[in-house]
Image (cartoon, one colour):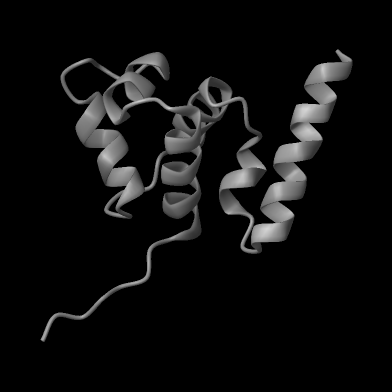
Length: 94
């Protein structure tokens, strides 16, 4: 019997954000400054909870996806949406 482990919140939010943005793991990694040869694997490991990106990498990923870093750590879905909408609204005013 295999034990199903719960994914970290940043993993779930990263996958959802990437899919919503419509970008592959590889292209997201490359745009965030990861090496071409490991970009897909690294993003996959972040999304599956095997590894957690360091703050600088997560900041670059967030920038590519036009999201604040706080979005990836919001435990509550409603709070995550508020964070995302706040960023979107702030971007429109700039």
